[in-house]
Length: 164
Image (tube, rainbow, N blue to C red; front, side):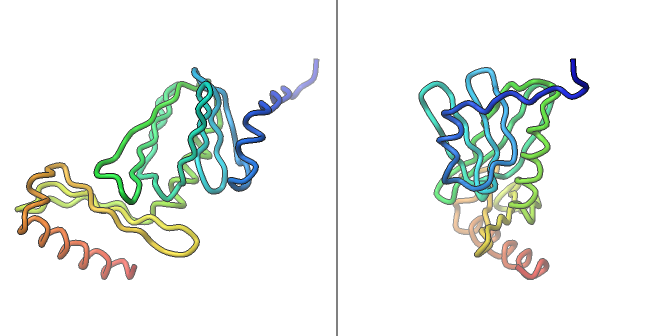
């Protein structure tokens, strides 16, 4: 018996799925299939369904062994969505997820605004530009005219302070 444990072979469906989604950083089996981390996206194969989510849609990730949870919000999504996977507790995949989320999210700040409630401002970047999102806990207040004005003003100040 050798000193080093040999890594399991990559499933063929994963190799085929990731071929056009950037360099593979890590992969692992989860309770329903396979999850892979590429330079450009998170790839989830569950049964016959393959989902590609770009890192520019990521907001945050949390690893509480054996549960990995990543929160995403696309440019056109009204609110964030969380996706979770059960992994081997010794998996190194959460480290790769953290690195990708950290490289995409450059600013993450929460402000309590008088007329818009608690609002999270997130700046995410790709190779070409920075994307800002304002995520409010109180959707009704944030969609009021005064709430929108407060959010816009806070965003201008935040962008200015970070130079983004």
